[in-house]
Amino acid sequence: MKAINIKWDTDGHMELLKQLPTEMEIPGDMTDEEEVSDYLSDRTGFCHFGFELVD
Image (tube, rainbow, N blue to C red; front, side, top):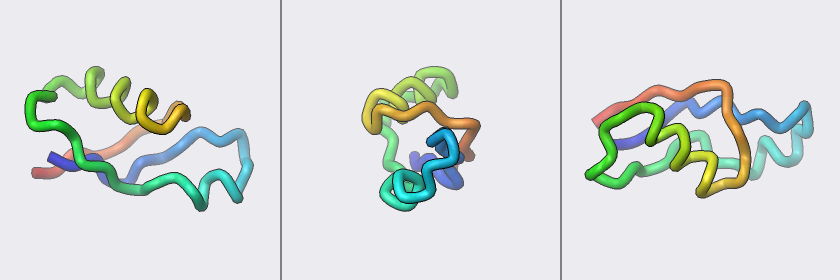
């Protein structure tokens, strides 16, 4: 599974936004969106405003 169209919360810092991925592979054992949300933030150190999941 992959998270796509990740909307990062960088408080308007455009240089940081350019460095963050817009897509991330998600471990296969994660199925809960809240768990995926935590995974994205834990891996990058940034919160987000949302994402889409695709297979």
